[in-house]
Image (cartoon, rainbow, N blue to C red; front, side, top):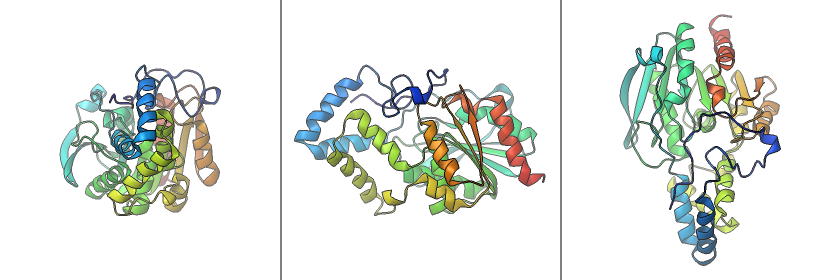
Length: 313
């Protein structure tokens, strides 16, 4: 069956998210309304009615398979200084990239992206005196594997952190922001500062969006969630997957950023996180969408300034 998730789109965003249906993006993003999607929905409609177990297994497999487009190019000044290595994580290997010297800043990309997606941040952070570490998550970029999930992704974040730490700051984008918090709560990831860009406010949202996109029935939707739980013997507890609660429990100085024209993760998610963390800094951007926000020079300057507060009071 055709892959339903779309690789990260780096073009300009269109209309603001609040002017479009939040449940089913139709132009860009991982749940894009491509020509093949209606046929996929018809297949799921039949399977959900006649063979719900088959529908759940198929949905589980698709949900755990990120799009794997070609890795982007590092900016020229960054590429010349890149130190690369392979790091064992579980039964696979992660591609890890490093630059500079100093307190460590870990970059965590989103679902279907790779380390190059946040590459514009590297040189400003290096020039500010930081050692920057990025990596391709399991089944992403140049790392091994075909499928992954929240548990493996968060474990990978923590595995890299243990190898390169102690961490001064973690900068996560989208799915990667949520998984950095998950790693902090359940895998011992430790840092002095957090930057969360374009995060969703609950991990259930990711599954619900997929289920709505392909037309899963409530019964099949629950079966899919149960399959993730069973795989890890209960380690993944959907009742504890609120990103808002994870952020509260982190008890760290946090910079939240979200664009009000984000078509992939509604701006309201960023507002929910900001409301739950009154001591955090919240920066709303405009017209940058879900992806250009991590390449915008003003956004990057704001991030560097926030991280430098702890180092240079």
